[in-house]
Image (cartoon, rainbow, N blue to C red; front, side, top):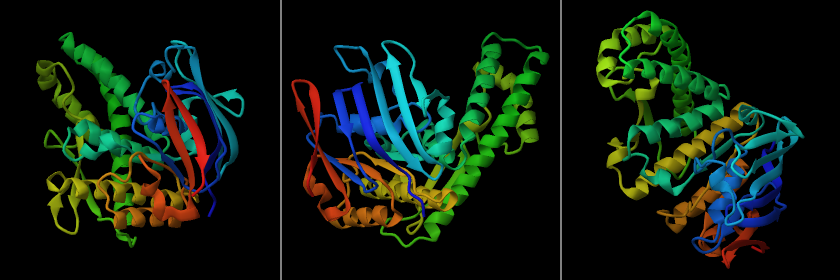
Length: 369
């Protein structure tokens, strides 16, 4: 099986890091240091090698090192099934982020064709008990890993929906204004639903076929409105029929933007929302690992994994099991924790990086196992 990994990572004036140069290999990367030292900033830089706004969903301006605010740059060599690519991201002070691949400007969507990056961060620990928006975002990240064109479908749908919502807020009642927008929403929305459903099926299969120390989650796509039109025709009809209700609400009340991801702890038959904190964390890890295994089968290489404070809520046995599964998968996993003892079970299977903070600046250094 081929490998997908990042090497020769450079950060300049990114968050708390003034200048970092890291030369890493295909093994997992264990990053440790005190809270606030800049560990998450480091893996946030790695998350930029995937389409979107990164694991914090931050703007380019928020990523700049302060107080200098000179702009920032992140670059690295991305090795994968399609070859080796030099990828760079930069933002001048106050400007949007720019992407270059092999020295040429490129749209963010191109990243999905040369890399797959998955992440699990502490804010996602509340996934099963927060609102549907977070679960949709989580599902769409996984769906994008399987279907690179999913991002464009979401953008097309949201653009048309914003225009439709503007008409609704302005109380426009002439149906001719809505027809073309609803047709666009129906086309993109049907593709969004199909991609999500196919991704859930892939995840279910990847969990069912694997022997793992982590519990399986049974997933289902449901609607917060009691119905979820699946086909282009059904969605177009639903949008048309919902106009008067939508006019009263001032927004669109039917479509894939109203979907929700429902999860169940399969072995116990208990909804994920009712599970303990530790069980909810274990279910999330199970899904990330299943996503990784399914992608490895699809593209011939496991994705890059970003696991921030992954040891939280895991005992030593389950922590060791997680590391064994990551190494068995062959994934380059960037993991953070407060101390080196949290990665002891990895032995020499990982490379270690210590992050410290002095006078408001992060310092990075390699450490032996």
